[in-house]
Length: 158
Image 1 (cartoon, rainbow, N blue to C red):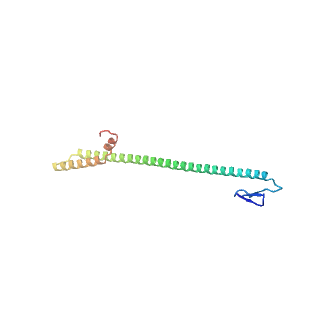
Image 2 (image 1 turned 60 degrees about the vertical axis):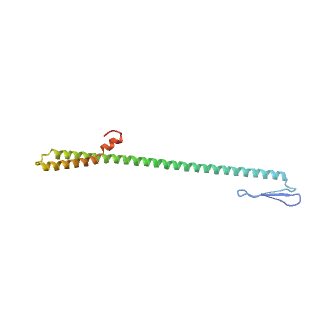
Image 3 (image 1 turned 30 degrees about the horizontal axis):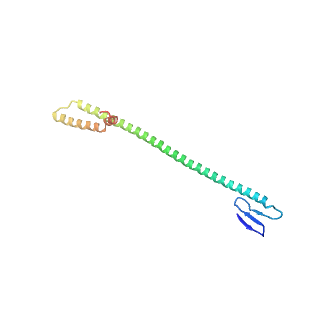
């Protein structure tokens, strides 16, 4: 707002704002200064109210954006948690299938060792070699058998 004196006894206000056209108040014989000042002050008041509303609107939009950002982050976090849960479940299932396969192999080795042990063998050196081989094969079966480890995971003595 610019205020300047034009002539002796006359006062001129020139109000300029981006959104509003220029408004000039000049007191002279044709225009009463009071009525022009009243229009000027009403216009100034509307301009202040409008500016405050724009600030409130901007703050509300900023808050909505902040809430959208928080919601998006929460959604991404939830999706990551769900993906981790799915991956953990998949790994758990794959672990179970692997355990079953290893247990089956251990059982098959034990069955095979029993079949070897039940077969008659002529001669003492062959009997001794067969016993060593059977002990070794049973150790292999024990090494790959997941049963003792699984039972320990339940705090059960194997």
